[in-house]
Image 1: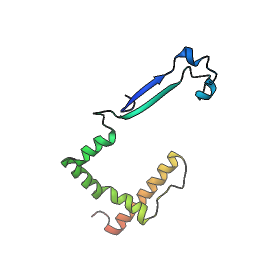
Image 2: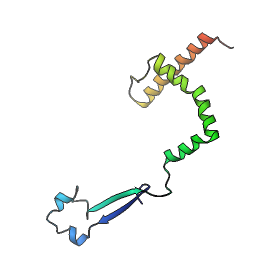
Image 3: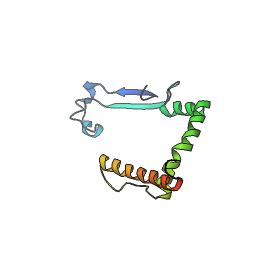
Image 4: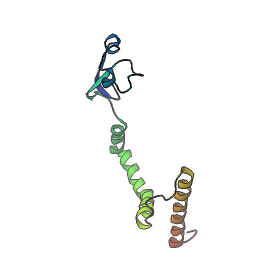
Length: 122
């Protein structure tokens, strides 16, 4: 098994690969690699679940549907407002700390706008 897939792996014998005249053409790095290795993928291993498969099952459950419904009502409109209405769909700065600061500025602007439109302290 290889990363959740059934596979057949073949490896050449050292005594056959070392003296071969085609060694430089057969291997990517002949100075580092001792023998030729080939893996043939046959398909998914039975019973193997990816993270995506597990998440699909989780979301399709009653609890998962409720969670997704609440998420769409609370989180997703914020991203839609920032990207769609304010057209802040890309960062103009580079580096994690600068992008983090720019994202916090976008969120601050969103929150100030909510306070301005819906009243302070209501």
